Image 1: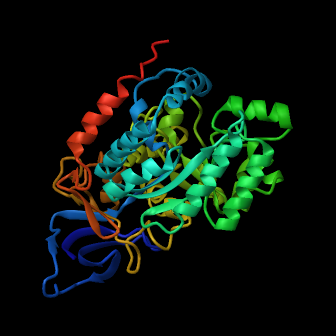
Image 2: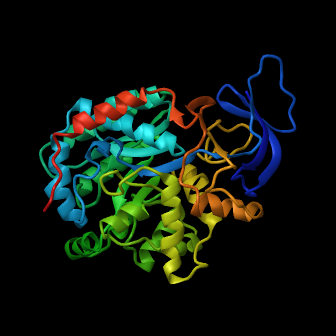
Image 3: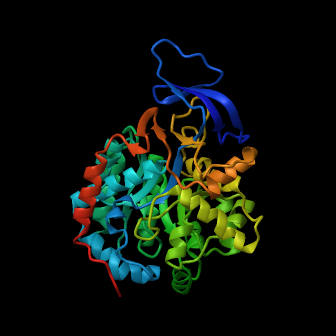
Length: 427
């Protein structure tokens, strides 16, 4: 297919070029050509006059099936929120809940412009069903804990998922120890050894709250980041979610070991957990991606909204601390790098996967625009995420703003029905 007459093509390539009045050819799952292109016989042509094309967004930290728990618990700090409300609800979830929650998540993510997400949860097989039906790209991992007698069982499930989905289309496996406070040193190390042997990401919550940081220092004498480094667990395969409470030493360790951070500003604000010093991380050379966390703590998966929050919250200490290009990088090419997929996704370049968003320029949120910088500003600070068309792997997965691979009405109905047994906490 050809996307013809694109007004603005935001490439996110090394030079961050924004091309104007340009065409783009997709062959199978790849971007084949960019330029002034002549349609070939029987080639589908989509007129993109009045459109903006950008790379599909990458959500670097999610809990997709938690969609069913949206809105059940508000106004609590992380520890109380988890122990009082979330963990008990998750214990009650069955496999159909996991699938339905994932279907709702995939619907929301695709319709708001996310084409790849990095997920930590359980019930991987059911989440894969939702991923395959929707056509989204996903990095999936079974969350690991060993604070009870099921730690080894979970680890075996995680390894089985990696073996099963190591060559499985749009599904990419990862290993995900939940956090240093929920996993023993032995599990953290064995999980890392396994992830290294299989060449998959190591996805973990790190220094999400001040209490976590304080308690860990009291018990172990070092911060969570230093603890990971002392056990030789920090490297470029690590995706550290949150990293909201870092010392200068922690930050330097992340930069030195080329570990990645998944920044989740909305969830951190909602739970009162604190905000990662992303401008300082970027200045020190840490690769920072963008995530939403789960829909019970955000409460949505909209990465355009997340970009705006990320772009605003860091301006409290000075309006020039972060700019729109840096924020867009976090939601695209930085996310790809964090997942080890920078040669496949994250930018619009020949040879990469055709994961693309087609946006209306004639949209009240996109007008007026003042040159390329103004266009980028609109994408980050104004646009709320309702692409007309979304491609993943060269396939149209959103058309006229709605998913094509899932029965949208059924997903919405099923999610409401299955969520009704999870009572909202009013404590």
